[in-house]
Amino acid sequence: MPRPNDTTDVELLRVFSTLMDERSLARTATRLGRSRDAVDTALRHLRRIFGDPLLLKDGPRMAPTERALALEASLRLVFAPPTQHPPPTKRRTRWRA
Image: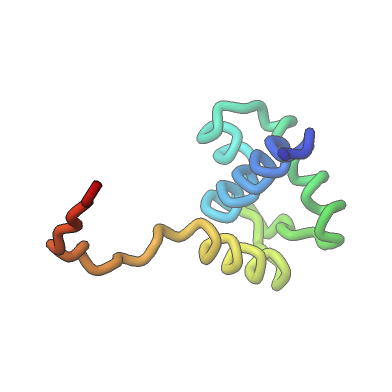
């Protein structure tokens, strides 16, 4: 049974993933169709959840922390497309009554 905040959790991970790609609150907001404040709020929630700043201001862009890089690698494994399986055999199954 889904927990009430499952959708929120997935949305936070989506914001995190986009932040890691864009390295910018403004570009992340544009890409996700959200306000910059909404993305900033999501980042604050993520920082609280993971106990790490995750992304730090580094000039015009944001630089990921070691924890953010590890989290990104884990998420890529979890959300990676499945590996290809061999094609099914052409074996026929006969059903008898």
